[in-house]
Image (cartoon, rainbow, N blue to C red):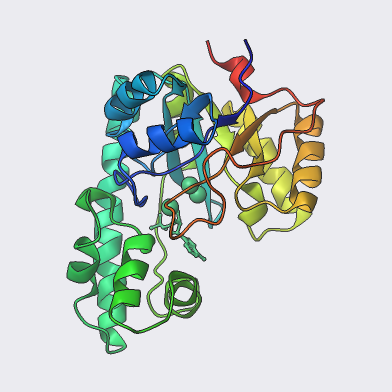
Length: 279
Ligand code: AMP
Ligand code: MN
Ligand code: MN
Ligand code: MN
């Protein structure tokens, strides 16, 4: 039977989510999700417990990850689905990415210290269950707790985005690397939340062309950060490029995410859903 409600994008405490993989599986089931992927940033350490908890909750499980990429100077995210988590090249690539991520966190902390906000790396680490996966979300949670800003959104606006004191440039994986690790492990690569990238229409088409040339096959059409206009726009691009369409909440936690697991509109009906590519 085809899934009635699939959600292929969310985060656990293995990256910057607020719930453990087991709790996410139960929440997905309670929300009516029947096919679920856990897609932590750059880390597949939650997949074993996620898959066991999904089996217990009697929902289908798909392996997932959200890989951080820098493409022509723009940070973008690529979701991998349905890969073999034992594949060596994927694991090695993700380990490398995590080392770079920690070193970047030090540079972010140094940059904040230079504007009079000391000790942020140590503070943020207290919010990271998995220190290797320290992210701007952990920095933001710590900075809110210090009283520097009223909420996570405001911290991002004033400190953690390009042009602000806590943002540093970073070389993530290349697009070819990320897609290659996923497809090399037997998985399907999907462009995550394309509506979030601040690029022109021409550049978006170049990105999607490069992604297809690298072996990418899917695009998130319905996702937590897309407006109804984004859905129409990226549905058109999915048709144009012959991509399969994905759907994912990008849920991080009840306090932080506006869209809960599985609580999304359906895909436009003529699109090929990405689960069709999963064996
Ligand atoms: P990083 O991978 O360290 O660059 O952190 C990116 C993460 O920060 C995203 O996956 C989100 O969880 C979070 N994030 C990024 N931008 C925002 C924002 N404007 N407001 C809230 N959270 C954000
Ligand atoms: Mn995140
Ligand atoms: Mn993302
Ligand atoms: Mn995400």
